[in-house]
Length: 119
Image (cartoon, rainbow, N blue to C red; front, side, top):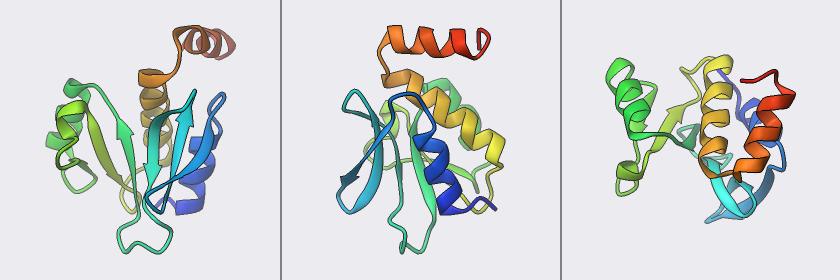
């Protein structure tokens, strides 16, 4: 089980990530664009919302529907819920990076990949 605080820290660890309130929940943005959002701290379901490709979203939701689900009304754009109670930290980190890459400027993504050894 991944804590809300750990997910929060992972989201903010990405280059130029900043936190802003979004309808009472913390959202994480790069150049003003949301790449992730956590449920409100007191929400009964602790989850994070990430933006994935349609193919990745479909594969995850089919392989583990207890952990991953498409967001109603926004799922067709790749927005996916990830349950913190059942996701591994390494998986969430990878999904946050993937989501961040979806919205970050290409130059920033390239600089990050170079700093990570070509990820």
